[in-house]
Length: 273
Picture 1 (cartoon, rainbow, N blue to C red):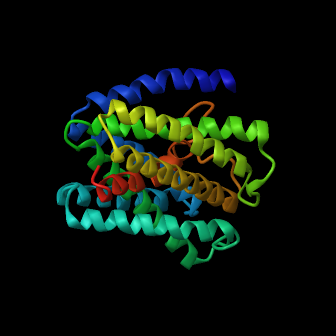
Picture 2: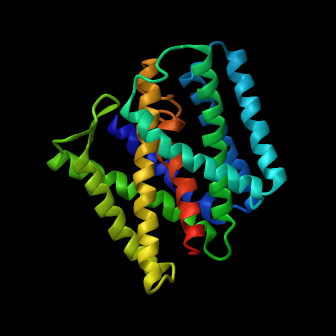
């Protein structure tokens, strides 16, 4: 398992870095859209939708939503509203995580809700990353920074939780996560954010604002991770897929990013960074 994880990482990391930094906006949107479509396929199993016809129909709906956003323009007011709605959901998601029994049945109303939620979250994450990527001068670097920020926080959470973790964060959803791991994630991301602020030519009081945005982003990335764990538990599966050897499915790799993308972008825009 470890060998597979290392091989997959060695292949994927250079591709991701090159894609983020060097792909033109249109190609970046297309490649990221394909990743989102793969995540939508896995999400359809978490709803759950039965039968390939229903799951393909879900892909068509998600693709249509992506096209509509692209045609409207990522700077459009409607897209901004979409991002704020997604942010509002991530606040509400904390209540859902605290009551993991909600939506655990297979009622039609619950499936419709999860289907609409998936489209909202996946399309909003795609929109946020495209808008972030399009920022003048530092856009691609900020997208890459966000991805590394999440990785640094995950690493901090893993090591802190393994060494000091005793208090469970959400035992009914993800028994392995602890409050000590959360503190480790926040410390690690804060240190990385301060160091990166200088590289991004952020100075003075703006450094404090930038670090604050990063801390809030990581808090919501944890919520994104927990939400996916909740959905998997409700359908009784361990991984969202098996596309990436040693790493599970696409959703397993981008669940934190789905939540972090809109939060990070809106935080930067709100603080005018």
